[in-house]
Length: 335
Image (cartoon, rainbow, N blue to C red):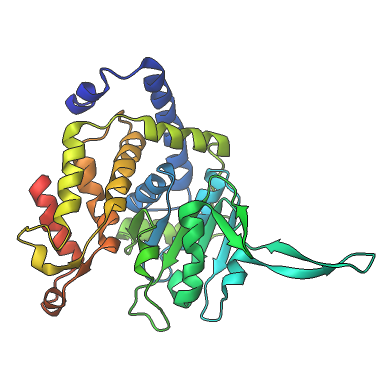
């Protein structure tokens, strides 16, 4: 445990410390099981697990064929979550996701409407290629991602808990894609960028996935245990230096911040970004075997938390400045 951890956790009650230490062991099992199937994407796996531990949703962005779908399926097995997949297409309708009311006639001939639940009624929803559906269909996820229930014909239907949306997205340059609405982007706790694997990992992929047998992931924890871990994350202490770093980072990413980078930003992150960082830095610390987060966690998660919550100005885009470049400058101020 480093000096920052000791100073923050010295006043922590003993039961929380004991639960955290047991949680660290369980999370090692989770990572080990995922690692038997997903090769060479350690940062991607870590950030996706951070999003789930923090109780949120993740947007996985990358070109086709980079194991985005495989990762979501693997997490469903390892975390013992009921998992369903929706392939988003231009003709997909909101009712294909949420469900719809159908007319049912009983034996007496009386007709009534009955609600037939859609695939969203699951614990882990994989929204595959989410940006291939129309904005109207994408918006069907808004209420469920924030409020964990849907409203059909004026009636509320609660979703199973825990509930996570892990959506995959192809880059917008790909043909037949639509940009996600800003309100929906803000509901994703993290954007996880997936790049090509390194040469050694790609060699391993070739050798281990083209034979007669493939490695399969095994369950590492129960659903109940995952919920306990999610509650534990919210009980972890956060030092004042970390809180100050989060506030400084998020507020400096807004166009009215007065910072030297403000003229590059058209619109920036709201308070939901601060909430996301408060949760994810705790989850990252626990996943890394620490009992409290540090400023280094804020720096590490700045890009996944902020990049989909910001839009650069026309001038910045004309100069081919990327949002990651701006976030990098903001991180340097607090790192």
